[in-house]
Image 1 (cartoon, rainbow, N blue to C red):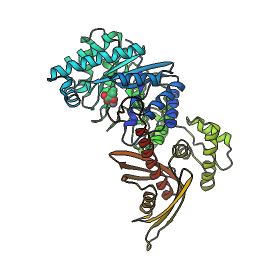
Image 2 (cartoon, helix red, strand yellow):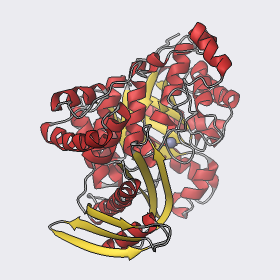
Image 3 (cartoon, protein in one colour):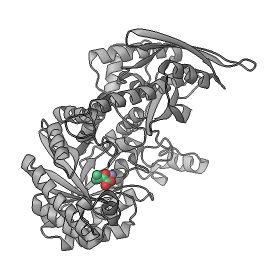
Image 4 (spheres, rainbow, N blue to C red):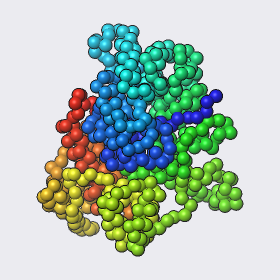
Length: 526
Ligand code: KIV
Ligand code: ZN
């Protein structure tokens, strides 16, 4: 039995669909390069037709990253054509097209009678659309993946018909997504076995699975599917993605490594890059990893109770089934300080997975020296924060120039901000319930915003009294959620930066929407 499992990473596509997780092009490129170091097999780089920035990001990744680069497309000519244009420069490319197959989706999305009057007719329209989409994709690209969206809730006979059609039309990979995270492991495994037995020529293609985590079963379902014959799994770093997220890459890979006694499969992943990749994705997306998250959570290898500590000190295996080093958690802390030079900084950042050009290095070096003056000891965590905070943020709109806050037990908190906007600097003051509220009110006056604050979170990331504070905010405007993240040893300044960054993301998206690419613009449709 062929035992190599292909890892299809969709952090940059499905993962980026996590509420408020939008990444800019530099950040996507940096993550894609890190995924190359992690040695995944395929990167789904984005959904090119959905916006010009998506298109551009996929194109850049296709031109620079040497892996199979996949681009998503609905079963429509314009989507497929745009996806192909975006990945054209990749040395290895894949078009990933999909159509909805469950009754829920068919009746919901194809309610118009132009798709047929009865469910039966609408289903036949989906079969036809799928065939035509795959045929068209195959006319452009030799590697075509077809997904039956909501396969988890699609009646088996009909699923077999659609998948058989996609194979006949030329698909090389057929993906069975549990789009709503509904199925149970045994049920999902049976689905895969049934397809393997019933679908003509299924042995000529790779069976893939794509599981969502609504019931917390995404990894279990993916593993059950592997045992039943799937040879590609679609997953994301830290399990980020729509709603409760996707199957977590690091969990699947480590299960296959740690339990190879029972699961005789292997991946090509270099597990020692898992920790750096997780940190980078969390830093750039602003999505904090829960401390007890398997493999990459802060507590995943921490032993708190005396009995456990004693056991681990005597013999590691007492309470550890894998070593922290196996997933790239460093044994010793590397500390930089005010005397560290550019060269040392660049070397350490490169070990953490970041590649910088000279301009970027100069920028980060000046932030680093400011921080080293305040903190004396600069840890890896601080560097990651600086990278996520500063280096790739495209502050094309508002930039915090200055901030003054007056607050205390018997005064009304008042803030004055100076914000740069192109070549002008705007100053505003406001009061608030507290210093952060006053700062946000002052910023609102500058940007004349209609944003509502949906989430404000502050945490200390490094330890000690001079620790860096990280603030993550989510704001809403016209139904869209935008996230921003700011770090500083001063949490009021971090709050101002995070708020402005979220506003900047909103501004960037508005500009992108007002300049759509040729053809239709389709955001939030997957
Ligand atoms: O969850 C899903 O069904 C998807 C498809 C587009 C593969 O993301
Ligand atoms: Zn999905």
